[in-house]
Amino acid sequence: MGDEGHFFPLCISKELFGYVEDKSFQVAYMPRKREDDSLALIKCLRASPEMKDISFVPIDGLSNTDAAKKIGESLFFLSFSEREGFGLPAAEAMATGSIVIGYSGVGGDEYFNEDNGYKVPEDNLMRFYEDAFRIIGGYQENRKSFDTMRRKVSQNILEKYSEDEFKRGVLQSFSAICDNRATTS
Image (cartoon, rainbow, N blue to C red; front, side, top):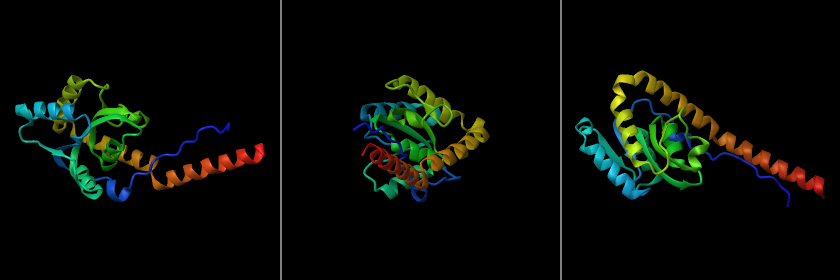
């Protein structure tokens, strides 16, 4: 009783989700999240002549290792997160250097902002389409700035959500709990 909440970050595996410099010009997404929205958005993007040569790669029914590989090789990741506690897939995609476009799922607000991706207001599918179309279509003209952002975002995510930070947070939390219990006994 009376203990304050404690925070420690999740841990993203550098081995599975480390930065990937050379990516395929493809778009990864998880269709099981907001299934109707993802199907509609992908269908609309594919229908555009400007997107006809772009592969859209569903991440579904794969092992964690295979999902990490698909995300790691994809230059873009569409986030359909919905009511997440954290929204790990978008953070993992950022860690690999994918350009993330989409919903934060609310829990992703902890890390997903205008500095590290293209966050779309919740449930605004039209804005999602417009942003995805603009960003994917504009990559070649702004490649250098996108690639600089990708490296920076990956580094920030991998530092903040590292195993060391997780351990440090857990130890600090337990230490604070023990100190509090010792002073209230």
